[in-house]
Image 1 (cartoon, one colour):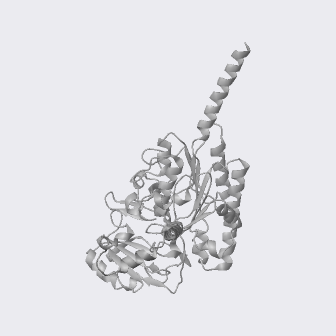
Image 2: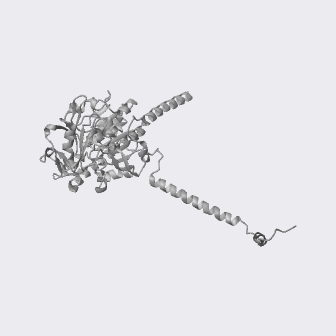
Image 3: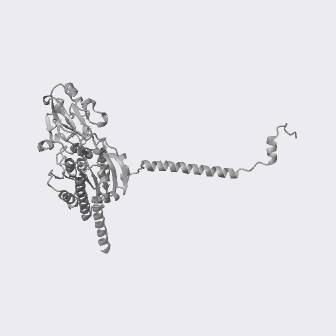
Amino acid sequence: MYMLVLVVALVHAAIVSSVDSGSSSVPRLILVSFDGFRADYLLNYSFPNLQELIDDGVLVREVKNVFITKTFPNHYSIVTGLYAESHGIVANSMYDKSNNKVFRLDDYNSTHDPGWWNEATPIWVTNQRAGRRSGAAMWPGADVTIQNLTLNDSLQYNSSVSFEERVDHITAWFTRADNPVNFATLYFEEPDESGHRFGPENKLNMSEVLGVIDKKVGYLVAQLKKFELWDTVNVIITSDHGMAQCSPDRVIALDKCIGRGNYTLVDFTPVAAVLPLEDTNLVYNLLKNCSDHMKVYLKEDIPDDYHYKHNSRIQPIILVADEGWAIAQNESSPITLGNHGYNNSLRSMHPFLAAHGPAFHKNVKINTINSVDIYPMMCTILGLQPEPNNGTLSSTKCLLADQWCIQVPEAIGIVLGGILVLATISCVIIMLLKKKLPSPRQFMRLQFQDDDDPLIG
């Protein structure tokens, strides 16, 4: 009887252990975006809470985002690993000639039309197709039905919902007894809104705003620790773009160059999308001489490294303002003191990435990755097969604890060290050989030096 009870107890323990290990073996990840968090804010302001996370995790000093450096294209690139021309969300405002539809941020029906989003597969769709559960607190596109799949848990966008409330929803999704999520995204509007309003170089106001952001990071960490998630859930904190300082004195007024009856402005400053109503070449020629501070491209001539011409939603003419300049129809148009959207090669447009958790190394810093590299890294962390994408895992291997990687300085050190070791070994061998060789005897030297005839025996 005793043996029977013991066997039953052991079987029960094994089952419980199996269930527990099975549930805990599913990797977990939270992806956080603070909109408009320019990379060099980390150098110019104090972030004690964020710095503590970085010291115990990893940092990418600059993330090169996708062109155009606006909110919706870049947030969709982060979760798909695709350039804007490939995932189809090419701007914050779009026109699709193929179906005569318009996409505008202030139009709920257009932003929630699946047709705009179905050209790509975001990571939450892949996660749910693998039998896991996903959640999102206001990430752009996350409350849309994409490829006939709706998120398990999501908050519809509402800017009045505080960051703290968004965090509380996410921790509840992770810790509930039934069907917890293993992946969630969290979006917050700042410091983008303040960057537009004050300009990124306004140290007094931006210092205050960024101090609040750091406290919000502290709240996130505190809540994860409170619910015993901090040591088991991976956290990535990043952004979609940076911010450039602008001025009312740096405005390109299109009315001075072209009549409004010649075109429709589909998307606006600082990268404007132009739909000609008359002859395209006529409109192009009028615009190309408009300003020395604006580049004008026919769609087919957009530089290849922009990855921004192979989509029907990209308009026939694209205007790209120089950093800090604004494109407006007239000089009286309202101009913000900060803006983004400019060429993604500009460092002012670059965000950062920090991460912490069991999947990441501790106190590791690298200089740069591309934003499309974040997607394959997240798929690796979650154990998902990635969809075809424009990113590469090799760029982020040095961040991941289970990936073998050598950074360039380390590689140089190994090569130089190897050369030094080989040189040392060679010197030792030469010295040993010299010691072992016997000195030739005198009579032998006389023989070798004797030029007479050989001895006759």
